[in-house]
Amino acid sequence: MQLVVKSTSPQTLKTATLVVAVGEGRKLGATAKAIDQAADGALSAVLKRGDLVGKVGQTLLLYAVPNLKAERVLLVGAGKEGELSDRQFRKIAAAAYGALKGLGGSDAALTLGELQVKGRDTYGKTRLLAETLLDATYAFDRFKSEKATAPALKKLVLLCDKASQAEVERAASHAQAIVNGTALTRDLGNLPPNLCNPTSLVNEAKALAKAYDTLKVEVLDEKKLKELGMGAFLAVAQGSDQPPRLIVLDYQGGKKDEQPFVLVGKGITFDSGGISLKPGSGMDEMKYDMCGAASVLGTFRALLELALPINVVGLLACAENMPSGGATRPGDIVTSMSGQTVEILNTDAEGRLVLCDTLTYAERFKPQAVIDIATLTGACITALGTQASGLMGNDDGLIRQVLEAGEHAADRAWQLPLFEEYQEQLDSPFADMANIGGPKAGTITAACFLSRFAKNYHWAHLDIAGTAWISGGKEKGATGRPVPLLTQFLLDRSTP
Image (cartoon, rainbow, N blue to C red; front, side, top):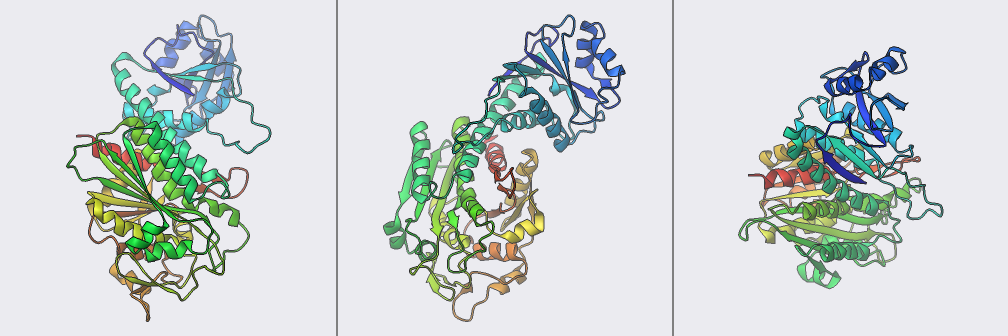
């Protein structure tokens, strides 16, 4: 979908469909009034008939509106004046696109920029609008024999005044990059596990490096992982025929001596649970256990397109967790790269094992901060549902930055406590720690485990088990979150 910004009069614009907002109570804003006046009151006349009252998401399509060059006018309900939340604004944009995609026109022009959204300036609301519209075009039908019919709509024009055009254009370009990154993450998350494995993620990373010469990729194979002493990482992979890989992405867009930010992604390409086998129902969805790694790849896709002046390293901890005669058993004790020993009480708590060694490896980059992203615990879904990612860490400043990025990107996180008392749940009589902390506070004890390997730098942990994937039904699939949050975090760090 092509996204274009224009500062021109909607009354004189030649387009297949002109999208106009109508407030609750059939109220017309300044732009709509000007269009209505040019059309000899045609909009007002239609509204008086009561076909649309202006509630959020209502739509009404008009044909042959006099004195306009637009072939159609789509009226979209915009709710009460000055009271729009992010969610309501997204509903308005989604409703508009939903109506447009079924039409025969190849383009549409939207005048929704005049709507007021709480806490958002021109840039912020344009980002929200553009991302919602572009996200709505996503489809994953790679494995369908019959592809969905492509909509005729190919171009969306965002109309604005001359004074705000630069900000609208900046927001639109940022939105396009973020959506491109989100789409890559969704594609990877939706791939079947027979096609998405650690080696294929290596190929994805190399393809990204081939497309952008500012990205360097290094791959650590099984031999290198053994040399580094990554016993926890290797323990996860030993039951699978798929060899593990640690993929290192290196982007140096900032000053040469500037410390990088490091993004660490959990990349379990299929999680059977290992010997601690998961129930069969819903196990097909365990292909999404690599969405942490996929979100790092997607964030790098956006980062590269935006060419941000910042140094960023991505570490993708990729393995497959399978049961076999060679698989790790409950009761096994492994030695991590840090030298700390771990008693594996449950082989289905494998994500923290690949992550702990990767977090130790992150130290060599002398990072400004490290954020790990993982579909780590079902307990996070119980705690926060699918609305917000769980957030914990060892630095209050970093936590605030991540929370703020989530708010600005409309991709929210919520902080959970990481009190010292929770650490006791990981006590083991045989090793330095156990890999699970019992049935209580599962999301927090998982983060407690990771915190023991992240003591030498500022660290934040995002549990995206509930936000990275829509479970069950026809809507089942990867969401691409938290690519918007992570990209916003990097944008914020790139701005003087």
